Image (tube, rainbow, N blue to C red; front, side, top):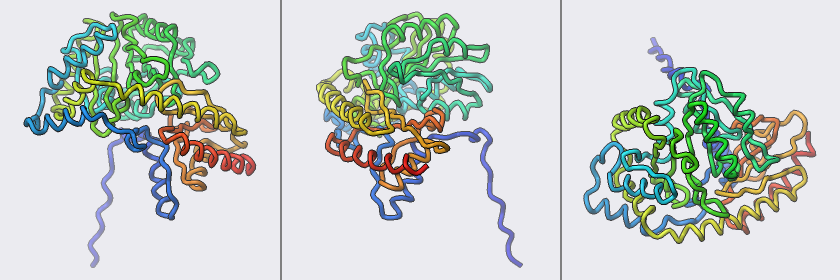
Length: 405
């Protein structure tokens, strides 16, 4: 008599609705590669994958830490002298903050998750921009909370719609997420808009979750921390060395809590959660200190390269019939819009592009835009010559896609 096969073991219900499109599209890319087609990955913002190099003094700092025996657990909130370096960098930007209000994290993502975990209860809401970075929606789903999505306007440089934000604030609203410079659009907000956002949150007792990872990668000038506009407002700032210092795999980031005693209880809770995960990666913490106190000449070269690529991207995409693109002002992302045939979606376009050409982008609905709106995100870290070839391919595919409704 055959032995009965045990039933599969299920998973927790908190994963219902959990999605992270930036990685999810890779499954289809793997199938395309298995068919023999080469895939060009334009879905993840990893400078190292496109030939940009981590500054040598950061590597030396990590190697030195390893050789000096810095291989055990660190304090849960991070090595004190590194936290001092982070605090000093905020002070240099005009925001007075002490190292005791800094927590070192495994990349910005862990910092965001720590903050959301102590701020929201089941059923609470967090105001998120559309398009949004999908880590926020995924984390809120896991926590049993939800995003309340506020509009940003591509016709106005992707700036937030302040009136729409006001209309969404209710008894369940706990925080306002501000991603500036923005991923996925490459937008940079005006000082007037930034001030209005922080004042709006302050008035309604909301915590501003300031995602400032790309602050040093604005083309015109670095973007100062939003909390400098109102040091008394409740703001938690997040950043890392992943992007501007080209070390994404090191998962070395931090959060900084301003707002004085209004956020003391939140800071205490974040530290308690940080205790539970022991610490972020010890040797990489020393790279943060090296980044913030050492030579940063590479950033000017990097920003120049990004500006050049952004100009190529906006110029070429806007020349393609059926595509429009707001020129990015920071980072290495563009959010073009395709005029879709009736009944087709952004995912139809992106998956069709992948299967037909091997170019992998991310469909806009993965960032909470409407599928029928036709947005997609492109990472433009490839060289200008490669980008021109990529946009030639996109032009040919788009003409074919739009002609076959």
